[in-house]
Length: 64
Image (cartoon, rainbow, N blue to C red; front, side, top):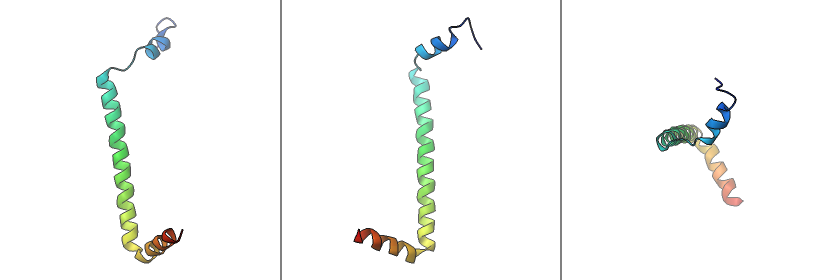
C-alpha cells in the first residue's frame, strides 16, 4: 500500500522498536538452535550406525 510516494522512505527511516527487534532476534535464535540440535542428533545417529567409518575419519583427522 502506498501513501503518497513516501511510504517506502518512511518505513526505511523508522527503526524497529525494541520489542519487535527482540522477538525477531529471538525467533532467529530459536531457528538456529533447532537446526544445530537437529544436525547434532543426525550426526549422533549416523555415528551410532557406522562406528567403523567414524573411527576411520578420526584416524584420518589425527594423521593430518
